[in-house]
Amino acid sequence: LSKKKVLVVCDDVSKLSQLEFLFRGIDRFGPRSVVIITTRNKQVLIQCGIDLIYEVNKLNKYESIQLFFQRAFKSIHPIEYHQLKLSQMVLSFANGNSLVIRLIGSSLRGKTKSYQESEVKKQKQVPKPKIWNVLKWSFDGLDCEEKEMFFDIACFFKGKDRNYVTRFTDACYVSAHSGIENLIDKSLIYFTKSDSDA
Image (cartoon, rainbow, N blue to C red; front, side, top):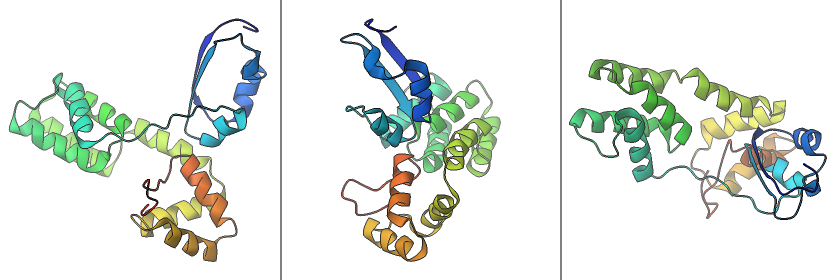
């Protein structure tokens, strides 16, 4: 592929070494080539020297409802009260995560009402293995201190001011500032645009 005009898509890249092994540098491709890389770790893109980074935001309520109805009922609008009730249950814990909405919606298609309600209640308590594995993969990539920091933030500081969270973690951990940045880069925590809450 060296010096050729190409379109390359690399999905779920976790380390810079994967890209180096495949391409020996993305600058080897010809002019006007396009390389699309998806990753849960923003640092991979930064280390690779990629200057255009698009961060996927969570779906808003309207987009979430549309996706759920599309997957579960092959429609973008509720037809019955039962369907609206199911969507509200799913959206209450999916929190705009398109993977969660897609997987749960697809698992409900063509099933009875009682099955659908039972399955949604179960998913709220016990996530599907595919969803769990995606989240676990990101978590497993953390070092011991980052894992503890993640648990602290997830359990005690949801919705808190970033400065407050940083001050607390700085008092407890050696690498608070870099740890928080790593958690953000791996999309395990986020702060609102105003940096007012986690």
